[in-house]
Amino acid sequence: MSEPAPKSQMLRVPTALISAVRELSRLHREGHTIALLQRLQDVIAEFDSKTVINFIPTNTNTRRLEEKLDQLETQLKSDRQTLLQQLEKIETAIRTTRSNQNSRSRSNSYNPFQQPTVELGAFPHENLAQRLGLNPATLSAEREKLSTKEFISYTRNRDPRSFGWEWNDKDGLYHPVPQ
Image 1 (cartoon, rainbow, N blue to C red):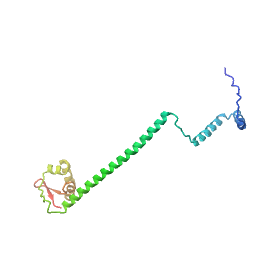
Image 2: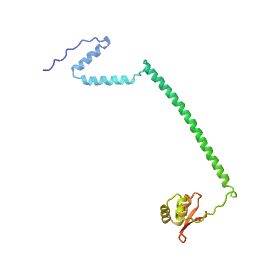
Image 3: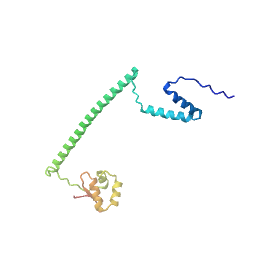
Image 4: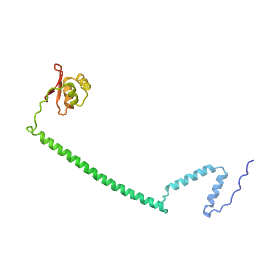
């Protein structure tokens, strides 16, 4: 058995809203209740999104949490400043060290009388591969793949003292090529 519809309830409404309540009642009787509720929700949501709510911390836990967050923020700013200063010092030290190394190497390289001349002899296959930072198989593959000029340029770019190297089939050794 279906239950009878509930009786209407009498509500007290402010005088200024009486005409609006009558209009809402008429729309309800005409079957527009769902559309009306949806539109009311839209209006309320729009109103709520424009309203600025200022939360006043009344709870002591909330106040303590806010104070702790402020302290952490201050500490993070301070730590960040300290890290930036330390990073600056490290960068300065690196620049100074590089500058000193460059000036020393420049002063040494401009005076040919202080540098001993080194005469390099021929190298066997394994020794040259080690000098160039390669394994012997890679060195052989590069020698076979490249032309003589390209191989000399390749070895010059890999050699720690920029010597080029040329393969001699007769003695089976690599010989330095003057620059």
